[in-house]
Length: 451
Ligand code: 2M8
Image 1 (cartoon, rainbow, N blue to C red):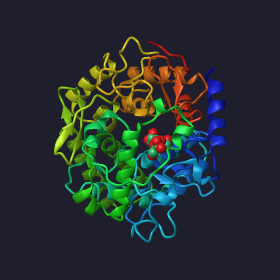
Image 2 (image 1 turned 30 degrees about the horizontal axis):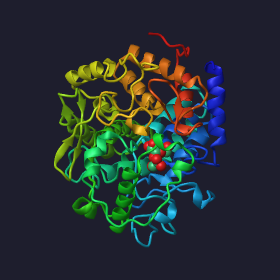
Image 3 (image 1 turned 135 degrees about the vertical axis):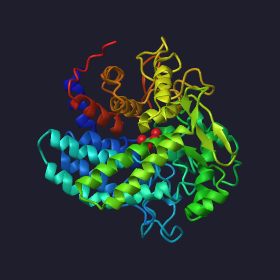
Image 4 (image 1 turned 90 degrees about the horizontal axis):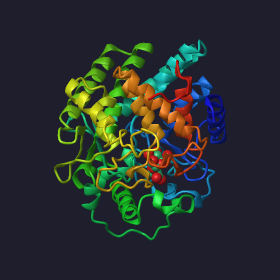
């Protein structure tokens, strides 16, 4: 499939997954709206329709909690109960979670990495580049700016009361990289209590070897019970949540999202005071990431707050300083070496020289299992965008070209087996289609790989 066909198919995937103002993450496995998926989806939609891209973020923000939290799932009221587990009934209504939107549970109570401000700004930049709808995009930014600021404030305060610059997560689902070996030691320390019998609906859609294990799901579900039991009170969770970690990937994304929001604040004429706050958060975030550097791995490491120890693992999250735009040249140089090495994209056995989500040399690497090894196009987009930001044009072009070669199978897989290139997980995954659209709209793209 050539570039034009990829664009046509990607647009068709987003159309098919369009539920009217919001996009389901995939046709069957994920019938609801996911938070960071929608941000990436908006980046793709920006190339098709400014208003619809803006609506994607706007509809998600309609479900923002009173404390600023953007929930990780907004449930589709028309999806049958047997379509996704855990569905809305497993989360809390406003009655037992004071910060949640009023009425019955329509959202989950967790959150995900804050890609939203990055997406919102990109909607304007794409509109400007197309000389279309820029005024509409600016008006949209004016509407969402206070909501995005509240979201970032929530992450910078309630999720970082120590002002470390690093975001705390209470559940691996909050990292978006659910079963990554990043979390294995912390998850092993979680003692599972009484959980109601449950049925895994994901296994009806995808081969079990491509999904998290039962051991992991028991912990995921137990953590939902514990978190719900506190009424989603972050202060209480800091004292009793059995899983509590500083997430370097979410923290790096927050740094870039704060930069995007600072730019947006200029566009919408927000007070200087806001910019000063955003600058302070950016500085703090970079410092927190500098301090999470692991020289032995040539990567950055997450931190288990419960155990009081780092969580060293060779996964794509370790590239967080690259994503944050670190000012430490030595860290960036080291990251380039790690990225090109056989630990990641330089493994000669790979189908395409694209970084697996977990290094094939990491304990716990599994080439078919979700975040434990497969290549994720959406993560490659994040790395590509970060390489461009770091002035690493050649590496960025290469990553994009091979990613597009991978997507020329037309499956728009959720993730890919790194050695065979087989599409895994869900087909027609919305965020995969979205990043393909963004890549192909990117200037100078000829869609052909160049070593
Ligand atoms: C995956 O996560 C959900 C739970 O949130 C699941 O496995 O059921 C992750 O890949 C996550 O990052 C993503 O946002 C979601 C929807 O694509 O699927």
